Amino acid sequence: MSDQSDLQQGEFERGLSYRAAECGWALIVAFFSGLALWDSFERGAGWSGGPQSGFFPAQMAGILLVASIFIFFQGLRRPPGVLVTWLQLRRVAQVLIPLTFYILAIEYVGVYVASAFFIAGFMVAFGSFRWWAVLLSGLLIPLVTFWVFELQFKVPLPKGPLEAWLGY
Image 1 (cartoon, rainbow, N blue to C red):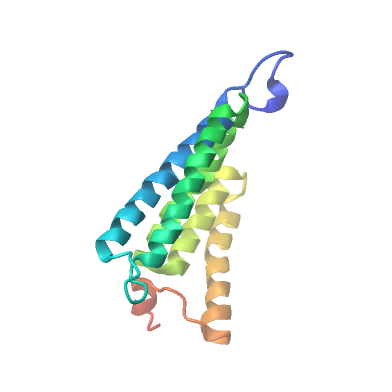
Image 2: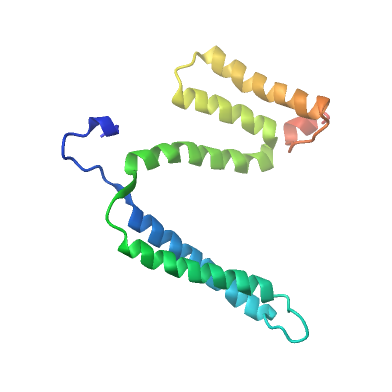
C-alpha cells in the first residue's frame, strides 16, 4: 500500500499505535529519569546547610519520573489506533537518516562540502532533475552560503580540509 487513498473500504493500515508510542516513550523517559536520580544522589541531593549539587537535578528527575509513570498508565488505557503508518515512518526515515549523516559529516568535511553532497544527493534521490541542475545546485548553494556567511557577515561556520587548503 503506497498511500492512504490506496486502501480499500474496510481495510486497516498497519503502523505504530498510539499506545505503543506513549508507553514506549514513557519507559524511555522513566529510564533516563532514574539514571538522573541515581547520579544526583551520588553527587549529593540533600539540603544540609544549603542545596547540594544534585538537589535541583534530583527534583527535576523526580518530576519527570512521576510524569512518565502517569503517561505510561494513561497510554495503557488508550483505545487502539494508529499514530503513524509504516509507510509514513519510512518517509520520515528517508529524510532523517541522510540528515543524520549530513550532521555527522559536518565535523569532518565542513558544512559547505557536506551541504554540497547533501543537496545533490537529495536532488538525485527524490527529484527528477537533470544532471547539470544537480551539479549547479550542489555547488552554487554552498558557494553562495559561504559568500554570505564568511565574507559578508563574517560569521564562521564549521570548515573542513578543503577550506583549510583554500586558506580559510
